[in-house]
Length: 161
Image (cartoon, rainbow, N blue to C red):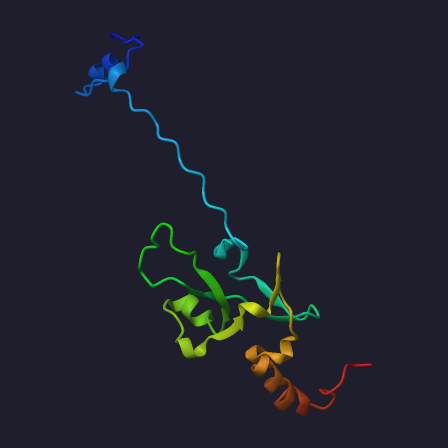
């Protein structure tokens, strides 16, 4: 058994059966990368910081969860050209997505409820709104069930004593 103990990369490549030779004069020098431009605004990783986050209103009452985001400044399936302005989030989307997560697909656009980005007050482990949750159309089904179903049950209109 012969072992190649040479430190020359060209001889080890030949021993391994490759035809490539490398000399000191053909060494490729790495190019330095330019520093990224400064970013105006808050930089978010949508999947990490937004999707599936609980949304609370300004009174810390749970409202919904974030199911998707709506972005402006970018065309669908088009590459973003270098130097072009960054896309911006204009709304958080929520809606009936359980069936589409199980069976695949996407709900129709008319089924999404939108939370305007201007209503967002803070993003942390939860997304906090700067408005009351009852002022949004997001909770209409909960209000309807409370008023039309739960409210008709004896004792359903007040807290237990």
